[in-house]
Length: 270
Image 1: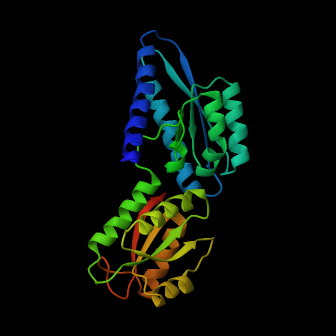
Image 2 (image 1 turned 60 degrees about the vertical axis):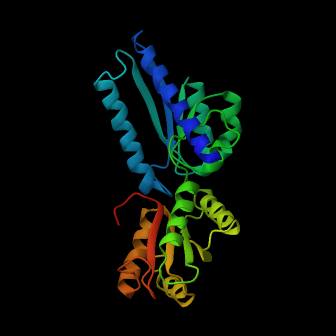
Image 3 (image 1 turned 135 degrees about the vertical axis):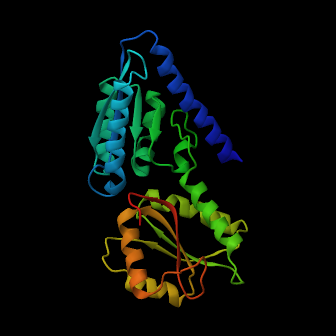
């Protein structure tokens, strides 16, 4: 309930920011500076790169169609390569340049800057949906379900739809970062609180080109469900390997096979 209230509150705050932009358009002729720092290259760039292109196209559309009347959005986009120190430097440069809104990206970068956001009192809309970003935060707006809400909800779905008898055995396949680990911790808390599911193994993936040994190990442990919380390329590799080995389930919860589910999975259509 607390998370739902926070979600509603932050949604209303975002709408208030947008409404403020719209009202000011009536005065006309002002350019609002925004800063966007994200991973166009480097780790998670399979999500960050299209995000950057989408943001660029969207603000161009806003300006070309005069969505804000005579006012415009001037959004500077910088590639921080998923480096927290670089994100911090870009944020400081954006603030010096007079931005009115910061569009952030990585979970780790947002957590590192959380105190700065409060001190400077600047509104922030993160691409990360990590629940910790809105705890004791007054300027970070998150008008979507958090990673944890998505992951715990998916775990509840597995429990409710498991037909094989007994407690479903699950493995997590996550990104090796705060982005990947946050929802896992909340799911573990849900299990401790009574969610009838066994987390058999947690795999923090690397850059492996072959997941055969890992997949066969999960099968040997009786795992039936693999919950993925990461980006496109490692999941695509794992799914390809599972298909090659004949380990991918053809129906939900198929016995002796692996059913793959994506809690948060960006960057591709695999």
